[in-house]
Image 1 (spheres, rainbow, N blue to C red):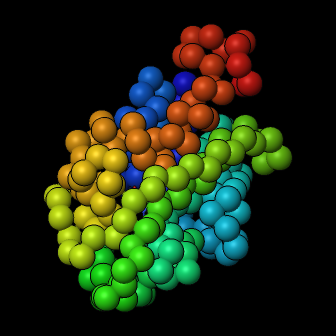
Image 2: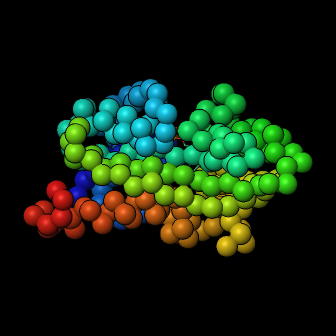
Length: 199
Ligand code: ITT
């Protein structure tokens, strides 16, 4: 089926399109909706995902998925957390990674996790939510060319690689976004079977 994804982030879109293979994903710009930037004024990943999802649902009135995600670093008391995309202000991802590595200089405790809150809205007041994590550690320096955002500084001990060193298919299988997406996907009826499942 066709699902709207309430995002302006092309990398998140590409990942979710693979995670939800079999469903067509549309984002606001596909429908000429410009400047889709609802104010992420919530105090949690979940609240912000719901804000984005509801904002798009009001415009399209069709099933919508929204994702609010970020990196929580133990030594930084969970920051950047819900402010991950805005950490340090107007910067490139590489500058943001350098900033975070600088703030972690000398830190022994390097545990961190990616978090993804994902909401599937069927109406403004009918929705399902999953929140998942990917556990890892903050590197001393960037490594790897794949992925996006904080991936080059996020090491996954269980795989012996940074998130930026994982093939896309593997990242989607183990990631916060991949696991949350699969949970919600299980609620969506298979294409062609509109009378089964929650829809
Ligand atoms: P939308 O709100 O339009 O979806 P965004 O990039 O602003 O796009 P978020 O508010 O959810 O999305 O912020 C997520 C930020 O967290 C993202 O910009 C990255 O910096 C970081 N992030 C989230 N998931 C990530 C991942 O899988 N790999 C690397 N960084 C990630």
